[in-house]
Amino acid sequence: MIRIKILSKRFGNKEIFRNLNLEFEAGKVFALIGPNGAGKTTLMRMVLGWEGDYEGEIIFNGDLRLGYSPETPYFPEILTGRQVLSYFMEVRGMGRDARERESLRLMDAAGLDVQKDPLVKHYSKGMRQRLGVAQALIGEPDVVLLDEPSAGLDFFGQQEIQGLIGKLKDRGKTVILNSHLLYDVEKVADCGYLFINAHTFRHFDKREFVKESLAEMFINTAKGANA
Amino acid sequence: MKALIKLHVKENARGRSFVLFGILGGLVSLVLLTGGLVIVDNNPTEKIISQFGTQWKFLSILSGLAAVAVSMGTIERHRKEKRTELLALHGLGLDRQLFSLAIGNAIVSIMLSAILALVLVFIVIFGQAPTSLLGFAAAFASYLLTAGIVALIVSVLNMFLPGVVAAVLGVFLVMIGSFHQIIQGMFLNNSQPAGRILGKAMNLLPPLDVFNRLTRCLFFLEFNGGRDLTVFLIFIWLTMTAVYLAGKGVSRREKI
Image (cartoon, rainbow over all chains, first blue to last red):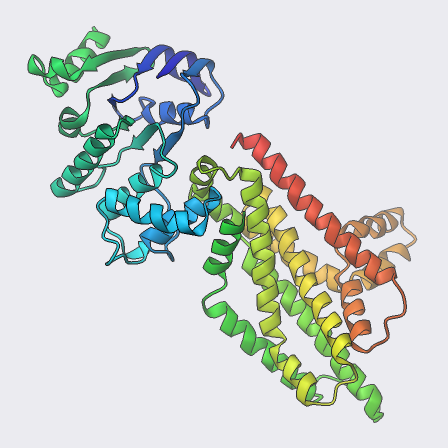
């Protein structure tokens, strides 16, 4: 479990979060929903330890391993997808045999064809996103953070990413998903947080979707905040 | 670190610049071989020495400029493309990333400098050069390491400055460094205090002409003392230390 208690997080004069209390339980798919600039990516970066300048604390229950796929992941263009995975594994100090075995497994898990594996510069956006997810799974992380994994993908690409997230959940991973695609979130998320502004956020659970769609929930929460 | 160095070399040691510098180095060597730019009396020994000496000087300047061209902007690009964070997540801290990139730049510069001097190698092997195999190997090594030092210095500059600014400073360092002793002498002989201060301050700049003199002495089998070699080795050590400390400093500032 990850518990986040942020009293204040600012970028210069702009307050990003105030009195933020979030909990991420193990084995669930969490979604972070909110308008652009609401701080969703910043929150992910805080969990990853790259935004240390805040008042409050982020508590990890045990020694959790984290995996992360950025919104627009950079991968060396002169390598194939499998070589990219092998490269990150080599950075981690994994031996050649383990790299061969694991890169094959992760390519397969991400639905990437090992036989027809072109250079990354020839990858489509969807293939890059799937490679990003595969990269995030190196080292068997307990928590996988996915920043806009379906951004810019067509319907089929979005469905593939949904399938991938479902597989991660089946394997007991905790997934924190940052997405603008409400339909996508309704399909895959168990629960999550809606962010409206620096001090307005609410928790939601997928059981609530029976009464209220995520879009309605979002609009009603925003109205409540502005009232 | 090995994985990033390998990738960095693979990404940068390709393309047209290698062919371009190969042709450029070949042309310089051939022009100087025919004596086109060497003016001496009709003493054949003196002419050969002058020819090879000038070749090393030209190649040294060219390889320094090649090192600047290879290294400029690489570290800035690495950070702009946000390569740093994923690598950090996989266990390679920013300080070690920067160190790896600087070493990668030095390796690519050394490869490029070797290509620059390829025609010279053929001339030495098949022609009449006043050297031995050992002398040539030692000279060649010091010539290559000089290019590596330039690449490391430009890499450090690029950790703090934009690529273009680092490149301009790099070119400045190569040009000043190649005539270090002459320029320093001019300043130190100046009666004005400012001139003498500038002369002293030049000790901070890499004396590439001293490294080049070491190369020529090794080549002509005239190596007669350790002073130039000591300066050379101290500078390699200082540059490596600067790369290491700069990487640590940037990493601490950026908390990655």
